[in-house]
Length: 176
Image (cartoon, rainbow, N blue to C red):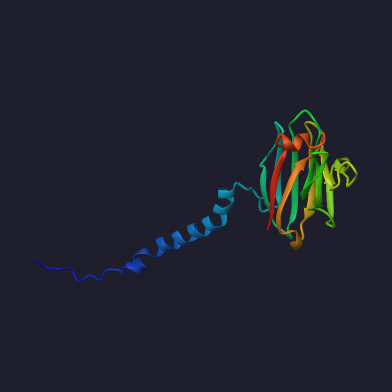
């Protein structure tokens, strides 16, 4: 019986394209998987992220925001009451009610809010800069977060002395 003397490609050469595809898939998973596991959503490549307020909840409720990137955060209020979205950490309690954040995520940043009437505070009622969104309306916050804001933050609505915050109009923000 005659044996073939035709050379065969080495295993490495034969599977090189498959290995390259597998490597690309693994690298993509390394970037995407942490966000899928922790449930956080970030803006698209254009810096835009839509956050819906409906049934006294944020969707998405957990977001990741990059630093040094122009952001366009669009808040859509589908509830039948006004919401004021604040961004910060270290909740202020007044007679047991959550009334705001002690530290403002947006302090010292250049922000633009459209429509301009949606800009709220800082004030005694809203100690941090807030975005006020009327029922059935949309408001957009434009901001670039500096590198010194990296870390865990929150967003929440403190209308009605924190009642909306306690009922679920709250979320987490990871700045990285």
